[in-house]
Image 1 (cartoon, each protein chain N blue to C red):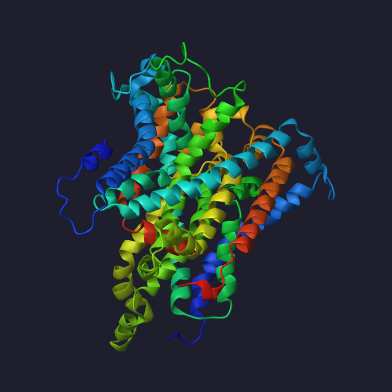
Image 2 (tube, rainbow over the protein chains, first blue to last red):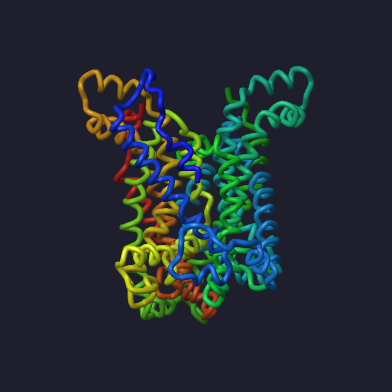
Amino acid sequence: MTATSSKAPLPDTSRTYTLPSARRFLLWTGMAALLAWVLVPIYFVALGAFGGRTGVFRWPKSIWPSDLSFAPMMQFLNIEGVFNALMNSFIAAGLTVVFSILLGAPAGYALARYSFRGQNAYRLLVLLTRAFPLAILALPLTVSFIRIGLYDTPFGVSLIHTVLALPFAALVTQSLFMGIPREYEEAAWVFGCTRLQAFVRIVLPLALPGLAATAIFAFVISWNEVFAASILTVRERTLTAYLLKILAESPLHYRFAGGFILIIPSVLFIFAVRRYLFAVWGIASK
Amino acid sequence: MTARTSWIPYALIAPSVLFLGALFIVPLVQTIWLSFSAGEGLSLVNYQRMAGDLNFGLAIRNTFLLTVVVVPLQVVLALAMATMVSKLEKGRDLVLWVLTIPLGVSDLAAGLAWLSLLQNTGYLNSALYALGLIPGPVGWLSQETPWALFFGIVLAEIWRATAIVLVILIAGLQLIPKEFSEAAEIFGASPWTRFRRITLPLLKPSLQSALILRTVLAFEVFAVVYALGGRNFPVLAGEAYTWQNENQNYGVAAAYAVLIMAISLAATAVYLRALRTRPEQLP
């Protein structure tokens, strides 16, 4: 595992700043324990996902992989409804990304560049969402969604997921745009660009990496959400809603396969945004 | 530095205001209204049915118990992680990436990952068997072993959601000027004193937002519990789900929702008061 590669003791002690070796040993032991704590459950669910029925019921288990194959995973994906659920999850998450950026980024830009009456009221509205368990608001939406035909569609699910992601997107893009000097834009106006042109040509390219990170967070928020997705769907379930539904009756190795598929994108995405993680959360939690 | 007030900022925030109005404020009001309505007129019938339900007391007790146990442990663990990471000389990025992976893991997936460890023929039992502590597969997640099940859920919750506390705290730690701690060191303050007298007070805003976020989410806990214990461990959000989807009784589900919201708001208010930072205390 990754833990072992960085655990190797450092032979050179010629650094300017070093802890006493006993304390360093302690530090790395603790660190290795923490890394194992995070990675081991993921490793075991992966073994469960690729081990199939025999793997799940083998007793006693060895922690080393044996008899792994893609067959159990393919089997799981071929179950009626699983692939559809996977697609629905992607659609809902994709739409959540689009909506939260399209609605959140302009608001973030307004907060960063203008001072206007009602600014604080708007901030309060955005912060207020954080004190509420938002997914629970899906409960009354069932009725209105049935009435307007949004019930049981990934589109409807993405709307409530956007409520979760939008405050986040607005706050993060606000600080993103604040970090881009307004003089750049003003220079573009001087050279005859309209406001929109100046934004598209000057600000947008500079903001793009941060916007991408925001988009990825929105995706993960939607991909992982269970409660609202389960309330608002019956046939067109997202993957989380599907897994929750079959939890009681499906064999263990299918559950592990589902869990593993849920985990994979998160791991990749966290890797993709690791540079932004702390900046983004520093802003969003102010 | 600010531009003259015009219609532009209003046009820019209008879509999100309308959206939050339609899908945050309206459902909020609807939930409250739904919880008080039964047939014609307002009544407390839904609340009476909720309170009269067998699982109600258990759900309240379990949800509070989980929150009270899990949230403080997460904060302590995240502080320890952040301190250790800051002492690393090499591999800090890699370590941080691994430690923050659970941040992106769904509560359902976290529950399933821990299920692979804790199920009857899982890795925990295999290890206990190898050590000669148990004669064969033992069930930890059934109704007969409520404390083992509770402990399993606590583990899964700590595993999953400590990462978010860690990220918020590290983001907060980056804002604290190094000079403060260095100055204290010159005056002979021990590492523990420096942590208690300098780092912790300056970290208060970050602690506050981490606590609010985690506590609100902890009262919503649902999928982890279902993945590990099914219906064996009733929690508030799980009851709301059951009343809505299985019993098709939207009124009682709404009553549960209002209860969860009230508890979350109360917790937020407590944190805002207890961890208030006066502006002059900020660096």
